Image 1 (cartoon, one colour):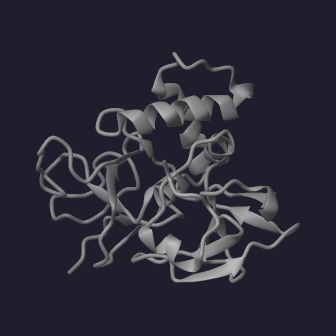
Image 2: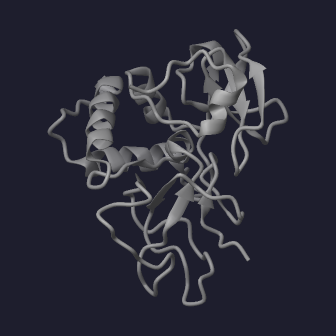
Length: 221
């Protein structure tokens, strides 16, 4: 039976046999039986490489952080997870630079401790009260940067903004493409300050299925 450790763009933890391309964590979320009993225990929500320096660990060791998995980086960003500063050092530095450039009103510099960014991201991704609710905001579809997730026409399905299209998300990949509509207000899943980082130039990677619809987005360098 699949564990409840895959993360969707809403930030929910779901059980699925589909594999992820990134791992990460937000603290110890499981009990002694391996059941998910909380959404987070730390503000440092990170996304990591699947392999790093040959390290191996259990997915849900007793009283230790819970390994989570993401379809791709765009999904992780939508859920509110930033790049890890250790195993993804170059991505982390690019992200931090873009995040600070995209959020000038917060008066932070590149030397600011990442804990200040994590605190602002926590405000952007979960509401208080209730602390379990996803924070969303409204924006015009054609003004959103590539890599942003929005709620689709059915009001429940996440779609990725990608070039001149939007792509329907599923745990195993993107399954459908539609032309990106113009001048249409949508609910945005990606946290507001993350969208600002994308707008400032941070480019999250997307699952390989995103390239099967004739994308106009250029490949990553």
